[in-house]
Length: 271
Image 1 (cartoon, rainbow, N blue to C red):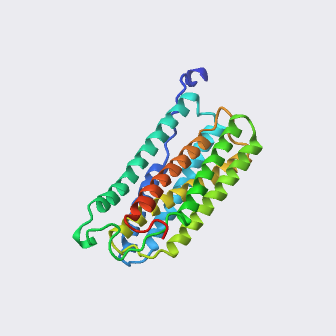
Image 2: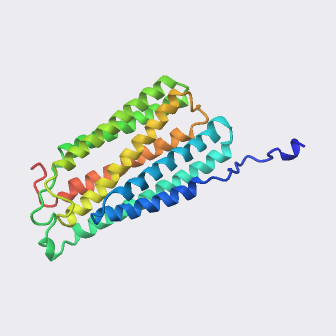
Image 3: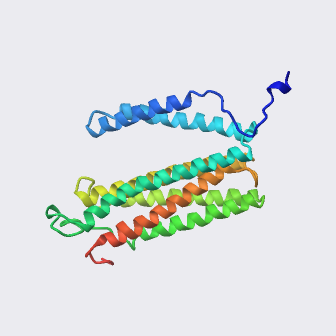
């Protein structure tokens, strides 16, 4: 009788899970709460939604880790499907950032009379790209090398190198976020200071959010690595985190060259 119920394929048919429905409801509550917060109706609904989304992430990914690390359900063909899913997710993220770049280039290439027919608009004092933005560029590029170091160490069975590389990457990611927060705090313009400010904060702000998410992603991988997870031939969780981090690197390069450097317009480049 046992053989009659044995699995005769390499696919993983997941058990029914409440987390997709719970996550969808939490995300909806978070979106409504964000709108209410923007209209000065209090942050309580936004906080509830954020907590719900965070809880869903923890328990859902806990189940996925259990399936792959302890129950052995992540066969090579399942891992291939997960890779395809991560590629499609990153592709969707690319299109997300294309929207913000599109808004920025639409405004900068065709400045209107309201902007004074110039870019940057009149009255906007832009950042010097060779100060903090350049420092953050170096930090993020360096973090890309450390996460690659960690990946190569894992592929060669060097768990010490894996942990050290992840620690360096997490520290560099946190440093990038701190510098960007400092830059925002001392920004010479506010979010409502016009089209330049809004496109700047939306593009760089969403990138900053992705850096925070990627840093958390890597912290989870660090804890898993110290717990003995990941093998040279079975480490999709770490691989997905590394892909995501490299995507964040590439987006920042576009932000630096397009918004910080090229977006200065006629402003003095080293002013």
